[in-house]
Image (tube, rainbow, N blue to C red; front, side, top):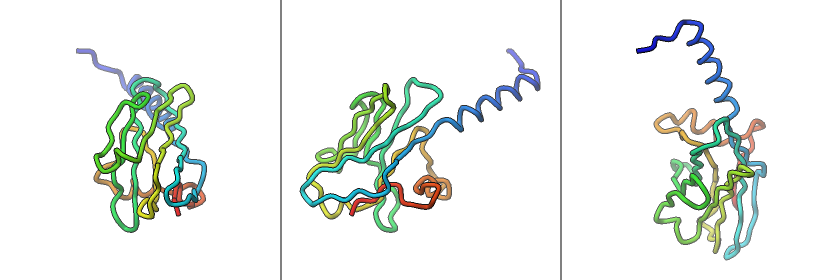
Length: 146
């Protein structure tokens, strides 16, 4: 068994903190407006310190309901999509440009909601942290379809 010295532990902790600060997602547009029956694509760019096996997740939150899992992507279009979203929602993760846009087709009024993407690990069981991720720095909703 190898035991790390206090200095090695401190350096390791600092490196992990620096790495965690670099991992983030960016949803640049605040709102999207589209007509019923049309198609909309919501952008999601991400930055990661480790470029292998990055999972990206999309969620939908409408009204006062809890966020609902839409899909996850690990590479290209590989991943999982919740059954209720399979027909009209899709995403392809492009690791070369660090992008995973969400495409919604055949728009319905019920698609009006806040949409957000997240890198693994996602937050579960801690709503204070989760809701903090829903808002941009100037308190604008990240994605809201009307």
